[in-house]
Length: 235
Image (cartoon, rainbow, N blue to C red; front, top):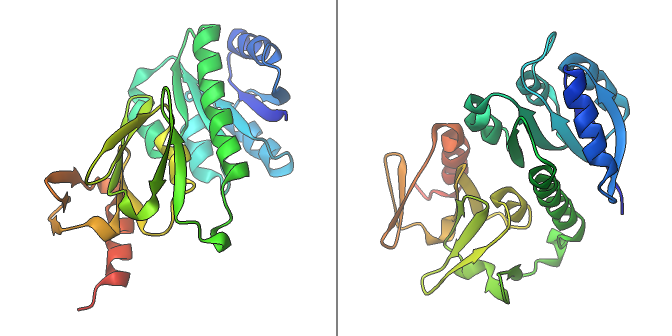
C-alpha cells in the first residue's frame, strides 16, 4: 500500500531534498509540494493526504497555524531548523520532529513511525467488537495484555512503557499510535502519559495517584480530563 504525502516548505533546497527522500521510499507517493501554510491549507481541502512533511517558519501562514486550523490533520512530521518548537509540535500530536539538516536515515525512521501509526489505524479492531485485549510487540516477543489490567502507558523517547500492577513492558511504538486502539476508560493526561481511569486511587490537585505511582496532569489535557471525570462522579 502506498501512502500519499505532502511537502510544505518555503525553501527550495529543502523541498528538493525532501522530494528526493520521498522518491527513495517505496510505499510513499508524493501528492504535492507547497511553499507555505496557506497554499497547503487550500491543497488539503481538495486533496486528502496521509503524511504531512511540514516546515514551521514560513510566510503567510506558519506550519503551527496550519495544523491548528485543520479539522482533520494528516499524520504530521515537522521538519524545521528550529528546535524550540518541539514542545508545541508534540502538543499538536505530531508523530515526529526533525531538525534540519535531516539525513536520509533519520527521515526514513520518521516515515516508518508514521506508517506504523497508519497501519494501526487500518487494522484497529472495530469498537463494536468490544475486544478486551490487545497485543504489543517487544524486541523479542509479542505480549498479550488485557485492557483492564493496564493502569498506565508512559512515553519514553521512541518507546512506550505499558504498566500493570505486576509488570512493565517496553515497546518501540509511539504513544499516539497506541492511543488509537485504547477503549474509553483510557485518557491522555500529559504528552507522556495515558492512564486507565479504572485504576485511579486518588486525584491530588494536578496529579493522579495509581498505587505507588504519581502521574502529572498537564495544563493542555487538564480540562478534557476533568470533564471526563465529571461524567463519572457519583456526587
